[in-house]
Amino acid sequence: MIKIHCFVFNPFEENTYLPVDQATNDAAVVDPGMFTQDDIRIFDDFIKEHGINLRQVINTHMHVDHCFGDNYVRDKYGVKVAANLGDDYYAASLEAQARRFGMQRTMRPVEIDAPLEDGDTIMVGQTPLTVIHVPGHSQGGIALYDKEGKWVISGDSLFRGSIGRTDFQGGNHSQLVSSVRNKLLSLPGDTLVLPGHGPTTTIDYEKAHNPYI
Image (cartoon, rainbow, N blue to C red; front, top):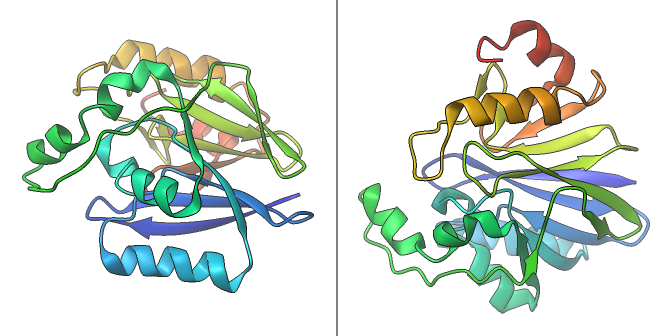
C-alpha cells in the first residue's frame, strides 16, 4: 500500500508528491518542484530521515513549475525521469519557460528517459500505478491512478472546482474537457484527486460541482 506525502514548493505553490510503498519503502517523486535551497533541504531531509529508497522521477507534464527539481533529483539520487513524449518540447525549453515568467534562472533541459503512454503500469515498490493520458493542458499530460488505494494524481488537468489553463503552446480547452470527462470522471466516485496545485478533491465532488466539466 502507498502512503503519499505532499510538499508545496516554488513561487507557483506546486504540489510535489512522494508516493512511498509501505512494504518496501521504495518511492517515486512526482513533479519535483524544488526551487530554493530550502526546498531542496526539506526534500532531502525527509528522504534521509525516513530511510526512503527513491527510485524514479515521474512528471505529469513538463511545464517548468513541475520540473524545477528534475535534474537535481536525477543527479543526486541516480534515478531516471519518466513522462509522456508529447511534452518533449517543454522538457527541452525549461529556461525559456522560466523567462516567460520573469525568472532569470539557468536551467538545463530535462531528458525523458522512460517514455510513458496511456495504459502503462509503473511499479512503486509492490504497488502498480496506471498511467492515464490526459491531453489538453499540455499534449503530454498524464495522471497516475492507484486503483487499490483509490487515488489519482491529476497534474494540472483537474483541480478542485476547476481545470488547467490551456493558453500555453499545446493547450486545447475542448480537448482537456473531453480528456477529463472521459478519462478521469470515469473513475470511481470516491477516488481522491491529488492535483498539481491546491487542495485535494474527489471525483464525485467534481462531477457535482465543477463548472468547467
